[in-house]
Amino acid sequence: MLIAVNTRLLLKNKLEGIGRFTHETLKRITTSHREHEFIFLFDRKFDSEFIYSDNITPVVISPPARHPLLWYLWFEYSLPKFFSARSPSDKTIKPDLFLSPDGYLSLKANVTSLPVIHDINFEHYPKALPQVYSWYYRHYFPKYAAKAKRIATVSEFSKSDISKMYSVPLEKIDVVYNGVNDGFRPLDEMSIQSTRKKYSAGAPYFLFTGAIHERKNIENLLRAFDRFRNNSPNIKLILAGNKKWWTASMEKTYSSMQYKREVIFTGRMSDEELHQLTGSALAAVYVSKFEGFGIPVLEAMKCNVPVIASNVTSLPEVCGDAALLAAPDSVSSIADAMKIISADEQKRKALIEKGKVRVENFSWDRTANLLWESMEKAVK
View 1 (cartoon, rainbow, N blue to C red):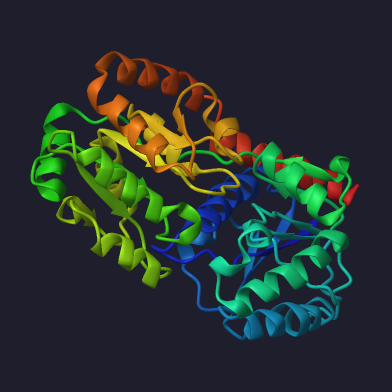
View 2: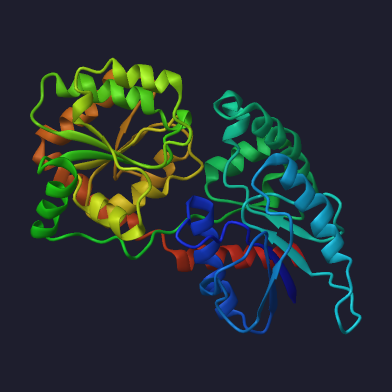
């Protein structure tokens, strides 16, 4: 087979959620299936570390696409032109399959397509994004879902959500659970104390990991921490992520906090820094309003760190019984969970033990195998 892959999000030192999924799955699929040829389609200069094996041909197609207008040009003009072009040997470059790990497809290209639609949060929280982005997603993703030969997604929750929202038969959608990086592992006590000294002046802390975005429920997290700290010992809150989506409302909530000096923003971190920060946390707190999966909860479990998670969308499915679940719309529910984690050592130990078992269900090897099975179904 000749398989073309949208690899726009393979960016050196900038692998976020979907980029990480792309990297981990393609690294395994291309090296395990050397009998097939792959064309990696980049929208800018690429790094050689992403060319995993000799059955990959990298191609740069302009324009660099990081804005709705440029997305449209890349997918609806540049890609169809490439797929209908002729190679030096005068053969039409028409792949047997176009795999798009970020969900975008080319409506004009006549090619069998498999998008990975991780979630459709923009349908439920359209105002949480700039208007032009929200419009683009809500206009085109239903069309992508209709065009796709099959769809892959990362949880049973997202499968059901996509099916209902876009009237896609359930049998057309394959669940391909995310994995967790093996670099996340338990830390020894010396490493924990060293990390806490570096980031929180030696104090234990709750950790949120991810984009500082309205959908991540940042305001209620801040309110809950303020309520928790009012009657609790010296524990801090660390938010590790890009503040690109920081809003005036978030700023107002933060500014009005009694304990805002106990809140630490680290910005974007390297994988190793994030491992150290996660492994040294008192607990990971991931009380999002909406998640298609939620990789940070697995990273915490891998580090033997207990988890507080939302009781909505995909998080109960991913966490099973290995997390303390809280209602994201209830400040008191989140604050109470923090209090339980900080005060009940037996509960903490029980969650850690359950987390060790739960996280064994997820690996990038399994993810890659499930995605390959979906790809095979699409071409059949």
